Image (cartoon, rainbow, N blue to C red; front, side):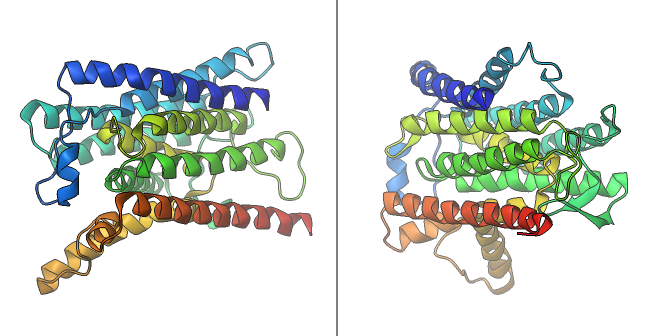
Length: 359
């Protein structure tokens, strides 16, 4: 438990201390956010706010995880694991795609960076690499990092997929959630606050799996997962990094995470769901991200079919802004929705364990 607190604490400290340094550095270099022309007029005042703050979040997550391992180095079997390295690969890889997107926005002074094809190719390469390596990396007991079975709160055995189909599903899941967090990152502190809550839920889930791991004790309801403690450390470090960044990103934001942060965080959420065998549960835990994405899909599809709009503007948070809600009101209420979704998701996870325990 001490190592989990250390990962969260150092993720928080690194993020909260490095972010103001990043603000100064990015201001000097003119790394300011470009604002979409068709967005709410109230957002025009945010033009020029430093962006690419996600670089700090990625560094804080990696730093918190590695520092926590310094306190585990003398414990047998508690070193850096394949699961941890694969999750870091996903975080850093998607963060790099987002960084290139942010850089092009700044370089050419427009609100669009990488084109859709280039971004999807980057997500494709990283997502498929993660999925295939996760299936092929087995421990001494023959347990892979990821399971080819579709999962909810644990694997659904009848829905075990061939390797190719699992890789495709994992890619769609990773790309979907990285883009979902990206779409949600439209108001000060919205994505960072919601992400922190989802990562907190995975701290609880993965640590519970660590305490009820089948490799330690084969009892009813135990979990066949790989390296659950290492997963907990990464989730805790990411949670701390989000909270530290939120100190500077809350309204009025002094820095934005940019695609560097949103793609990295969304991809990491999907990775955590895959390695903990809770893929479909993430749809519940990250319900707000799903709703925001669906609002865009519905808006585009309905407009193409009828030339009319369902929402005043998509993504969903902009609809409420144009309906007269203050930005801070939208943010806090969306945080509340995320908190309820996380509580419900953890309840489902715990209820499943109680069913095995006969309680």
